[in-house]
Image (cartoon, rainbow, N blue to C red; front, side):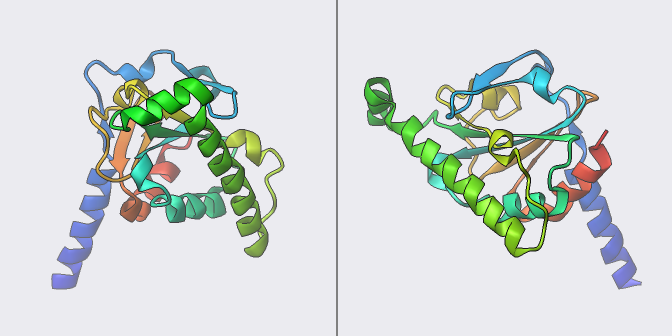
Length: 196
C-alpha cells in the first residue's frame, strides 16, 4: 500500500510539473523574432503549429543541459512537429563582454564555435547510437544571445535562471515549465502530451 501511495505521489508530481503556466499577460503568444549567432532569423511564425522547446541558460551554465539535449535528440530525432531555440541569457554578463561584442563581435564568435561543435557532436552521437542522420540539423539548431533578457522574460523568466531552464510553448498557446535538466522524465512526458 505504501508503494501504491508513493507511485501515486510521483505521478501527481509529474503532472504538476507539466501543468501549463500562463503568464499575465501571456507575452509568449505575441509575435517575436530573434537573430541567432549564425545570422539567421528565428521568428515565432516558424514555430506556428509546432511545439517550441526553449532552452534558457546563462554563460556559466555551459554544458549543464547537454545530457538532456542529447536525450531529446535521440528520442525525437527530426520530429517535424518540434522546433527548438536556445537563449543565452546575458543580463548579468560582465560589462567587458558588451564592450568586446560591440567592437569585434567577440561573444558571438565564441558562441558560433559552440554552435558548430554542437551540430557535429550531435551528428556523431546519432551515428554512434545507430540513429538516422538529420540532414538539416545545422539549420535546426538555433542559439541566440539575449543581452537584455527580453526574450527570456517573454517566456516567463523575470531574472536569469539559477540553472538551465527549459520551457515548452504549445500550439494552443500554453507555456509549460520551466523544467530543469534533472526533470527529464517530466519534460519528455510533457513533450509527448503536447505534440500537435
